[in-house]
Image (cartoon, rainbow, N blue to C red; front, side):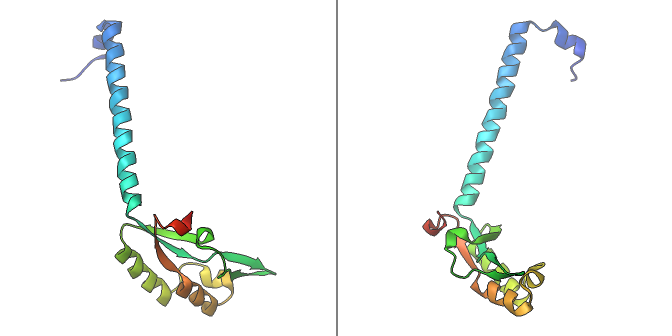
Length: 126
């Protein structure tokens, strides 16, 4: 069944207003459900984090002394096992331009050795 524009013009304003209110209600309800799903996902998620870089002259160094709340969040995983698997992979081969940014592969590897998987609800992140 299809609705033509002429059919909509014949609707009484009160019915059309109710239809708009119902579609708004369902749009809001879907948004609330999606927000709760996202909150549930984040509640049990794990961040792959590494110490932040700091500028030292004309190059970067890793700031190993930075508190965990200042560390860089590289990726978000659904489980700790997924995070640990990715971390092992990154420890073998540092991601992207990290060796170029730090100046050497050895510095990049030491940064990835310091990286860790941290639960999203860890109080040290606040």
